[in-house]
Amino acid sequence: MDYPLPAAVGAAVFLFILWRALREFVVRSPLDNIKGPPSPSALVGHIIAFFESEGANYGKQMAEIYGPVVKLRGILGVRMHYTSVLIKDVDAYPKCAAPFDELMLLLGPSLLTTERGQHRRQRKQLNPVFSVAHLRNMTDIFYHIGHRTCKAIDSRVGSSPHGELIDVNGWMARTTLEMLGQAGLGYSFDNFVDDSTDAFGESLKLFFQVALIGFLVPIMSYVMPRWLIAAILRAIPHAELQKMMRISSVMAQRSKEIINEKKMALMKGDDELKYKVGEGKDIMSILLRANMLAPEEEKLTDEELIAQMSTFMLAGMDTTSNALTRVLHILSERPEEQERLRAEITEARNGNDLTYDALDRLPYLDAVCRETLRLYPPVAAIGRGAAKDMRLPLLTPVVGEDGTIMHEVPVPAGIWVLLNIQASNCNPALWGEDALEWKPDRWLRPLPPALEDARIPGVYSHLMSFSGGIIALSGFKFSQLEMKVLLSLLISSFKFEATDKPVIWKTSAVSYPVMGGDSTKPELLLKVTRVQQQA
Image (cartoon, rainbow, N blue to C red):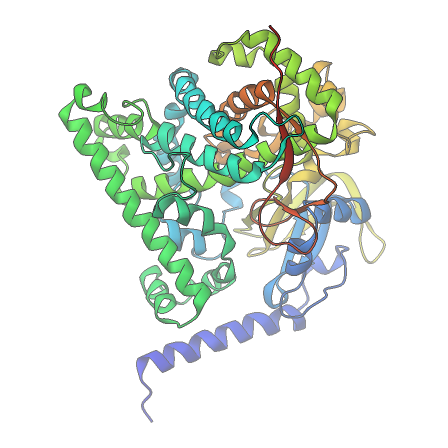
């Protein structure tokens, strides 16, 4: 009997998924000697427990109970390493053990999704774009947007001595999106008057809220090309899938339109750029200009440029806005620390905006940012696949299920490895017994010798919050500047106080706050009052 091709493909995919699932439960693995919590579900493993934990508490709990390496189960029982042990052999641990994942499908070939030679070629083009010289030119752009945010918040606070409840998370999201738009793309998303942004901005906000295909695409990639998976997902009458594919299409189309507009402006010369948002100082203009002058073999294709644009916006929006929200939340519960920071900023500003270098010389502002990103990294875990059978050496040995002491653990080919960022950032053996406490003053004195000796490969202050090595986030200095500019304006203009309602930090692709345990809406309400300026 002859079967139609779609039915045959569907049957092959079903059998492949069934075999992958059964294999995890009937075939022994070297990981079985590594300790870990019992799996609560044969279907989803520990995934729900991970994402339902408050903030990054799941990672802290696993590290405290089981040590630096934990065995977890993923979708369909897939075994995973959950570890705070740092991986240096990047090529041996690709971003996806499968041929490709959902980010490659939805975003295309960007720094976030490419590997090896293609990744190195892209990084060579992108790293100079985020140089300090370029960031100095963006400081004025950031301050201009920050002042607009303060003006909008001030209009809602008014002159009431009792203050007003303000959703600071919503305002941080709007502000960082506009900073990314103007300084990153030379494009404006928000007028700070209406309560809406354009379709591209809305798609960015919704991107990480749809996670269903994240577990389907890697499995399907073993038997299907990207174009076919995309076509199948668009054809499935499922609301969440349809939503995700629409978001991807809007982002790609708007990215293409903005890039084409910038190319035309660049061809017309500097006089044309003066009348554009960002005046040609934005990252995309700099990148396009450099790409035009690059040797043919090093140039980025239009597909790569579009992917870089969407990735840059996604990687920078929620991470920075939620990090800023976390700082304001912490300071609202520590009025003495907030006043200390306000005094430093007010004295330095003296009523004026600060230069890039002046911001960099504020020790307590810098310490507050570092300590918040250390204890509360916006991204809880980084995933990597194992390209071949390897062994991972341990700084601290662990005891296996059979009682043996292991100084290294096996990493079989194809295994998914999750780096527990917070456990790495907060290891008491490196940071001291107060590692789980928020103490900015630790950055104002010499760091522990054990930390210096450990040689953590993170690009930012011995931390893995921005990853490390050749896979580190290129825009981490851009994010730091955003945070310092906004904090310098907000803290000198307003006083932030916590409410009686509990704040819960949820775990997702990026940690986010909600008001109360039953809420799912990203939100942080704080009581905000004007700071009385001294005559």
